[in-house]
Amino acid sequence: MKHKGWVDELPKVLWAHRTTHKNNTGETPFCLVYGSEAVIPAEITILSERVLSYNEEENDERFHTNLGYAKERREMAAICKAANKQRIAKYYDKRVRARTYKVRDLVWRDNQASRAQNTGKLGPNWEGPYKVIGISNTGTYKLAELKGNPIKRTWHATALKKCYM
Image (cartoon, rainbow, N blue to C red):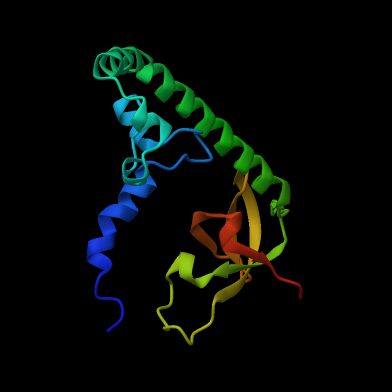
C-alpha cells in the first residue's frame, strides 16, 4: 500500500487551501475570517522576511488595525464574488438557445420529467408526440394528446423537444 500516509498529509493540504488566494474574491479564506494573512509553516522553517522582522507589540497593533478592515474586506470579497457570478452567467447565457414553440406544434415530452412510465434505464427517454394548445408563461406550455385530450399540467420548454412529423 503506497497511500497509507494520506491522513498525515491532510492537515497540511487543508492549511494550504485556507491560505491560498482565491480567484473570485482575491482573498484567502483565512484572511476573510481572521482579518490578517496567515504565516505558513514553510515561512517558519525557511525564515522568511516576515518571520525575521516580527515584533510582538507592532504585530498586536497591526492585528487590531486589520480587524477593523475585516468587515470591509468581506464586503469587497462578496462584491467580487457577485461580479464573477454575473460574468459566468453572461458567458453561459450567450451560448444558450431558448426553445420556443407555437400553438399547434408537435412536441415530445421528457419521460423522466413526466414520470408517467417507469420503464427503467432501457426504456424510452421521450413520450408522445403531443400538440401544444396554449402558452401559459414564457417557456411553459399547455399540451394535449393528438386525439385532443388536454393534459392537466403545464410543461416547461426544457422538458419538451420538437417533433418533426
